[in-house]
Amino acid sequence: MKALILAAGYATRLYPLTREVPKALLPLGPGTILDHIVRKVERV
Image 1 (cartoon, rainbow, N blue to C red):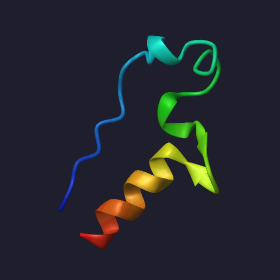
Image 2: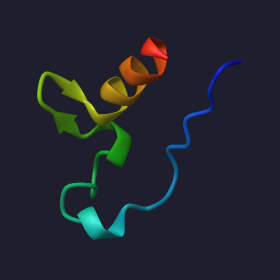
Image 3: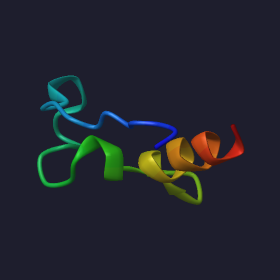
């Protein structure tokens, strides 16, 4: 295993956006936040 991506917590600072969708799955550009993190880890 090369990396461990921590994606936990309630994300209360992003609250109405995270009412139904976890923070890691919020849209960000062409993908989700988690997509961007995974792509960065894959490059390393």
